[in-house]
Length: 266
Image 1 (cartoon, rainbow, N blue to C red):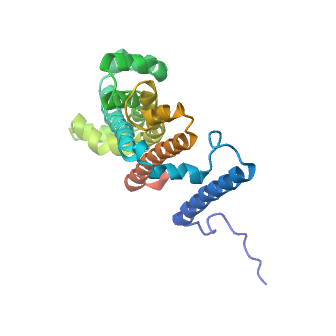
Image 2 (cartoon, helix red, strand yellow):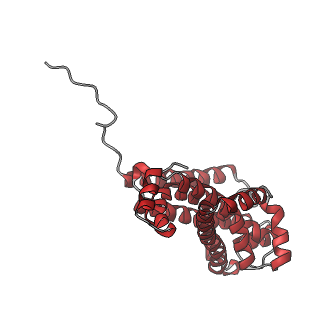
Image 3 (cartoon, rainbow, N blue to C red):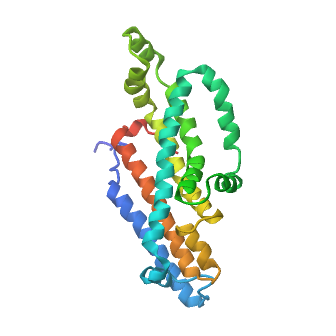
């Protein structure tokens, strides 16, 4: 009998994507069930650690205004994030076009990025008052630099031969960007976008914590005074779901626009 060759990793059947998502969902559901069981078994007070059933029960109470507060926080997260993507890509393009601009301005952006955004938040509120627009600016300040940095790197990683070819064909800077630099830098741009998606949630909530009259962060501050821990947990869960939705949207766009072997893990 002929000896069978050992199975290589390439020969092994790959798990289908939906099985992975089902496994992730099952793990989360199991964690929630275990949480419920442990809280009931230990009889912990609700103000210390409420059971998931008590947390989700707050959704039926109208005094929390979940829909309106969630809508406000979503505007701050997604609005600030979208602005940071546009601003980061545009400025990165300008930096690759002008060495003088890079030398003059880019070090300033690095210095500004070192400022703790929690410390910068009160100043932004003093300058622009408080509200959705101000919290969008705080979100923008957190998300902007990772996108700028990775986009600059991506635009510089384009093959020199391709750039020489476009120059030989008398292509404009804009044509070079659209047809050569942008497609080649997409893996880097999406790597920065995934990092910024995580920071966007923090930016919106920091703004609402500092000074706000609406939003999920504002709601958390209000219910904290009465030790309404279930409502605080529910607000955290909704904020987390907003962040997950943004991150999944970025992953979907990356899947549609970039080949799998060209993606950059972040």
